[in-house]
Image 1 (tube, rainbow, N blue to C red):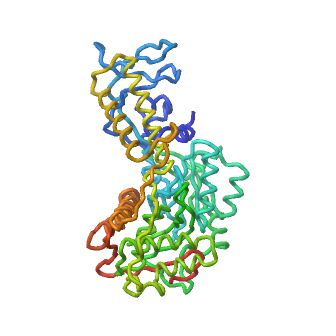
Image 2: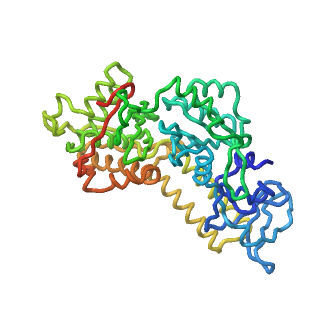
Image 3: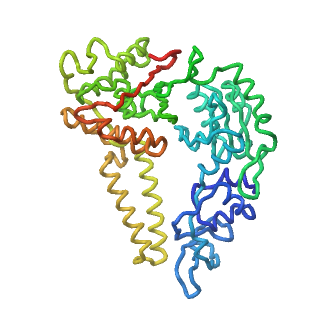
Length: 472
């Protein structure tokens, strides 16, 4: 298997022995290019016969030995070095930086909402995005391209390990967005030091893309008057309804530019709270008023009045004064529903429980009831089971989303805290640390019962709604 085919099908993390089996003589090149050793050790290694079973690592007189766990086959034990157990991870950031340098672009790490796809660079003064997709099969790759074309309003360069998943449908979608696909296998070479080099000069490689992008699209967010792009930008790129039987809140995809950093915000309710407060900085909202504003956006979505509703929410209207306070008094408490965990989170937890249960059974089959590894897996399993029971409920033998009614002012404030912290800790901390630090300051952002964004000095945000040519 070639290096790039192996990378395309590789797990996100595996024991060193697994990587050696997968990559063969290319292991050293891959390690320098896009792998990273961790301080973790695995208690299972792959079978050297390639039968697909995992050998349990146990101590013996010969040192560490991998013992076969097959019920039918009887594979030989594997004598191991400690280095064979070291867990190596696929370092996508490291690979992305090398792609950026090879294409003479500016490295940029931005996780997207599309699975296994992220932005790794921007090209030229217009900041054309270079995206890296590590899809493992054709369906996943096509889904990624479909989502990228739907979400992005600008041309982009998409890089993948090989071109084997690119068919006619993919080419049509890329052409629709004037996007270019480059596969690492045929367009790049791996140098001895682990760096990447394009087989042709980068400008020549991207010449057709640059030409079509220049003719069909202006630079993203470029001002019509030719002036400088805004330093602080909040731009709406799309809207959609959240999935769920009871929760159909409308959320938007927002792009934020802050202090030279750009981040695509996840379409979560917490993002809507943050955008509302940031766009109306200095205005103080109580918990009910903030919730009502988000619900008003949901009610108007899909109608001709949706943009006017968003304008009103972000910039004030008859119901709100310039200070953000409701003119007619506090909005009455609403009998709302909020899902603690959605179906996807429940499924993720169930998969983790199933995986841990499998590990527990392997230990038990090996009569390993007292080792630290077994006890640790047992505790992890119990913890996941308790987590599932706390955040979901079992109905007719199936785990389904658990809801709680919130009709009090305090509980509503708690929900706002939950959603805002999810965005801060679950997305911004990793994807845009400067903006995270800015919003994580309690002197800048207050949320809960009283909600206010009041940075000092004031930030001159430019807010653009979808379809607007100029800032509002």
